[in-house]
Length: 272
Image 1 (cartoon, helix red, strand yellow):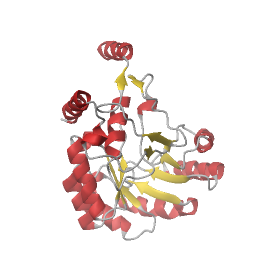
Image 2: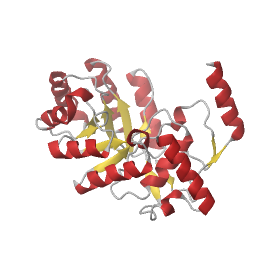
Image 3: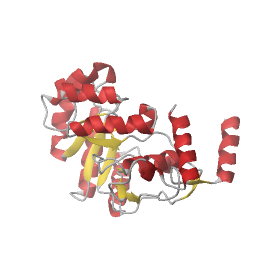
Image 4: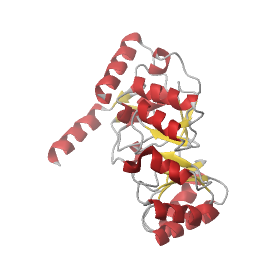
């Protein structure tokens, strides 16, 4: 559904010769800010990459935890030492902890000053599970796998389960429902943080357009196209500068495809 809806918005924008953000009423910001996604396996590798991302101007760094308690603490400690106070740290446990271990790890990670911990407990615990944990910690919590729709955002708000909502347009089934979910969060004073998936620059461009129109957009959003061996978008340049991308004024979703790269991707899909 999301793919079809995005394609239709792109066609409408190209026919009207207008970027999507104008079709949606106009932008409220000139750029979207992203986090630096720290890569590596060992604490040393992750700390080195974190330092490089901080030098590139990323103000927020995103780190996967849930790899084992001792390793998690070593990783976060090494990264905090490497970047000092030059960047804010966000941790994503990806549902790895049960409630007891989550409470233990929240306390152990407190000295490293995490800005929030994302989806620390399994999604089936629901908004109530996150709320139970939030009631006993002063480290903010971000809801991710618990939230897929505007209705889910409402449940998070109702239960006071989270401080940030992490959500993407593929999960909401497109542009209009994403904006609806953001409006529900805004009414409760919560920011929306863009959820990245294994995506091409099409999703990055589309989300850039829609996020430009949302008042309660976060300043450390997820971006994932850079993990591809090759992207299929030729314009605009989607490499963040100082951790941010400007809002594209190209018509439609604000991108142009690289036909040769699309062909190579199709061939790889058939082959693999």
